[in-house]
Amino acid sequence: MKGQQTLNNYVGASGEFTPIVKSTELHLNIDSLRDIEVVDTPGMNDPIISRGRRTQEFIGQCDVVFVLSNSGQFLDQSDMSLLAQNIPNKGIEDIVLIGSLFDGALLDEYHKYPSIQEALPAITTKLNNQAKSNVDKVCNEFSAHHSAEDDNNQSHLMSTLQNALPPIFISSRCYDLAIKPEQSLNEEELHTMNLLNSMFDDFTFNANTFAAVANFKKVTSKLDTVKAKKEQILADRFNNLLIGSKREVKQKLVQITDDVTYKRKNLLEGDVESLAKKQQAVVKRVEAGTVKVNSVFEKYSIQAEKTLTRLLTDINQDAIQVKQVQSQSGSREESYTTSREVSDSSWYNPLSWGSTRTVTSTHYRTVSYTYASVHEAVSKLESFVVDTSKAIYDVSENAIQLGLFKQDIKASIKDMFDFSDDDFDPEMVLMPLNNAVERITIPAVNLDLDAHINTIRQQFSAEQVEGDDIAQLRTEQARVVALLLQDISVELKQCINQIVAKLAEEQSNFVPSLTKDLVASVEQLKQDLTHKEEVLKGYDDVLQKVNTDLATLSTNL
Image 1 (spheres, helix red, strand yellow):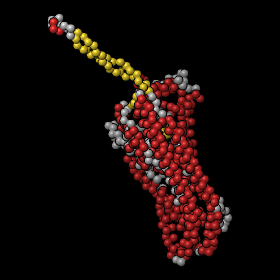
Image 2 (cartoon, one colour):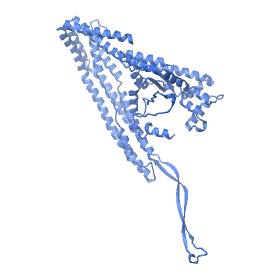
Image 3 (cartoon, one colour):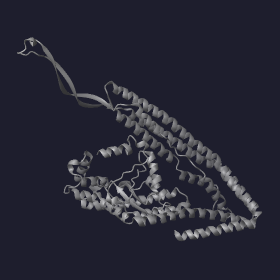
Image 4 (cartoon, helix red, strand yellow):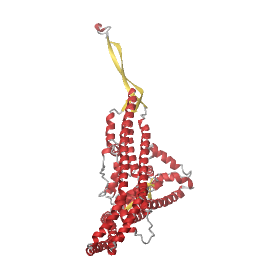
């Protein structure tokens, strides 16, 4: 227990050293882990934001990934984003999907079945179907927010996840109940045990049945398999990493092929005047539709500002609870002394007759008192800062869904043209449009509130206060919260202004940037025509090399 408390000081949500801890290493003398490095990463919803980012940085370096997700809502959008960033091109092929909190699903669904024997397989089948449905759904949603050139990545992501289905459903709570004697269970564990035992009148769990529901043997079996295949996995990992890199290169080569093929086509046709007229018509249409494009930018700008401003209101509401310092009643043993005069006379000493001496005695009594915990007050402040920082980061990331935003921009341009017209060359618009859209970047808000956490503890020194000092603690707590809110408000408003200003900048540059690309294509053609044969040979050489490389890559993918 002492070791657990020490560890919590470094990794717990309210740990004393948590804000400055990057990672923690534990060396255990366990033979089954020999030559194996197990990394337990924080989840993407971890309250410590830096740890969530650390997970993103680290997961791509792993050889085998055990993905733990809630059985009831298997693989949500944050899980999928994490996997999508790391599976396709970082050589990760070995994934084990694990659904946690199976005991919760059992307690939610058991009343639909007459016996535990029917409930367990039926609920497992239902969760398997839900998991597959969720995987399909979030993959499709993720695919919808990414460009066509990501199709290969998406297909690879889908196949990797499909190969990992069905998940292994486990219950850590049932595992604890299986291995612990009943007298050592805590209140929460006893509560769960009683709930499970009350499900069916004719069934009571024992260590074996708890272990069966916990289902840890399947996870252990997977781990044993991974260990047995260690050398092969490492070799495959290198090969898979190479394949992932080739996949990225292939995407770039396809883009180059499309671009060079289009330029070569225009050069062969050699009709600069006709191309210039088409280009001018396209530019005029795009410029005429500037209002439509601007409306998309303005829509997302208003949306982002409203979302972040609403967050500030929520933060102020949360702060009300943080200001409250609860008093508690306690008791302690206090010592006190009494004294009394006693005779110091002795019968054999007449000179001492009538003399006295003082005798003191020590006594103990139980004293009730009211106190407030300084540690609890500080923990509330720290949790408030951590939660606020995470909320700001999460909300700012989603304030503008960049994939949808770019889709709307493209749609506003495409609506200006009739793509069914045989005289219209869609590539004239689409290629410059893709380039212009991909140049759009929106900053995410990332407030560094570690300084606030470091100043909180300086406000207080004692572990708890009593009497009149409780009121002083409450006053100090309210003062610190007010300072935090003031700083957070200023910083958040600055971030709102940054996002709005960035959108305004992108808005003002977008149409000019697009039309510049359109004009540049004609100017490039004019220059190429002066050295037509030489440029054509250059294009052919590029296409030949690219096609050779593509053929080589395709045989290895």
